[in-house]
Length: 405
Ligand code: SF4
Image (cartoon, rainbow, N blue to C red; front, side, top):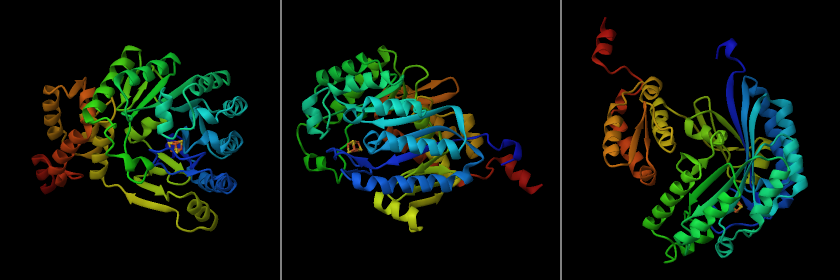
């Protein structure tokens, strides 16, 4: 990087807090349940990690910090404020840095939220999930719906204006009316951002044993609930900017957009993933292993790979097609030195099927296309693979003659 560019590169920080009060039935995130005893050692490891990494980040300006989990709100405001103080002291933050806290409605208290707000936290993402208490109990959630509006109110009083609610659809026995009720009650709280995730029954979770449960909505029902959410949220002014994410104008999550736009981020804590300097790496998904590795220099990472230009192009397709921004042919061809033409042909065929649309220079999926995105992205990647041998080298006839003379 040239000298005059120093300090101009933007970087997002992700801090993973792998602690929860208890385990939800569907959860496959890296988190321990009820292990308060581990928290002091984990905090010490996180601080050491941040302190040791900071001198290597002098050329970056941090424009997003995201505390995810796990349940950061259960970890405790004092620990989080302490971490944020360290980040501010040792790294350079932009003036408008977005600082997000993931929280659960049962573990937010007014005084703690006030301290977090004063420490610079300015966005809160609440795991609300459903307005149906029976469903919340089935999911193993510790809160009921009545705690959600109370948590939103506490956050507002503490000075949080940028509030997001996470919701889950496709729950066992969930009807369209039930989902409509959850959406309506969520929108009544006027959050700036709403995430809607389809329930996935993952192997290794308690819910896995119920994967054949006839109560679980089939694919058609999930699709119906999804499209209902897209229409309902659009009518209320929530713009869909990613498959599962909807926001009022100006309130898209800047941190999460980094993942989908291929921008750099650095993760701290167990299981935290990073994308930095053309490398992708992930910390071991185990809090005790993380504490030991940071403390004594043992094995820290579970993955480390340099991503080739071809793989970067594939990631561009996979990640961008999750977003409403979609793919930009010029950007694609310049970045990856590869023709967009085969992708364009496929996108044209999707437009004819109502699965995609062209927005100016860019191509994106429609909500129906998002529903089929796994299959469609697979087809786009196949088309891309056919010309893999072109990647990174000039391929036109003129280039051939240029190499001869
Ligand atoms: S609160 Fe979140 S991270 Fe914790 S167990 Fe439940 S779903 Fe998993």
